[in-house]
Amino acid sequence: MFRTLATGLALAALMGSAALAETHEVQMLNKGENGRMVFEPAFVAAAPGDTIKFVAASKGHNAETVKGMIPDGAEGFAGKINEEIEVTLETEGLYAVMCKPHYAMGMVMTIAVGDVETAPDGFLEGRVPKKAKERLEEQLSNL
Figure 1 (cartoon, rainbow, N blue to C red):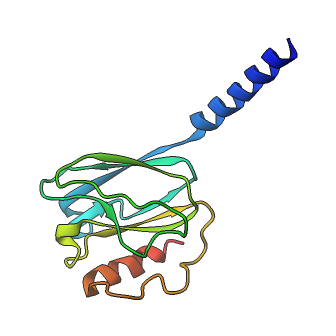
Figure 2 (cartoon, rainbow, N blue to C red; figure 1 turned 180 degrees about the horizontal axis):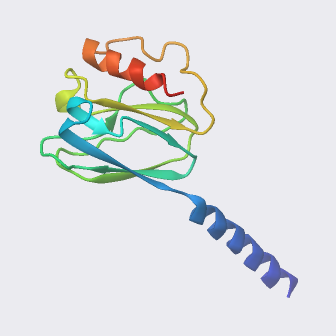
């Protein structure tokens, strides 16, 4: 009887935490409120376990993490062109996301998972196109 009660409580606790997880929808657009070739919203604050749903609202876009711009220990992701994808992010930290065909045009977004107050050292270092870097810097001002 004790085992059944303990199992039931454990399952209820797990189901309760899953129910708290949120899904954030991000549109991939040719033109949006902030210009051409954008993710809307361009910044998402999420909790560990939340899901980000990338919607191909305009054709010709994908969503994928930028190499070297995700938290240590996190797994990157890469969707296909015109593909709607959902990713659940468990590792706390900053994730930079790009549309590969439009990266040089600045089609990037930032996801902050958990309590993130500042970007890690070197987050914007490396080969980041000028327009993408400008937009990432603007997004980081949301921290």
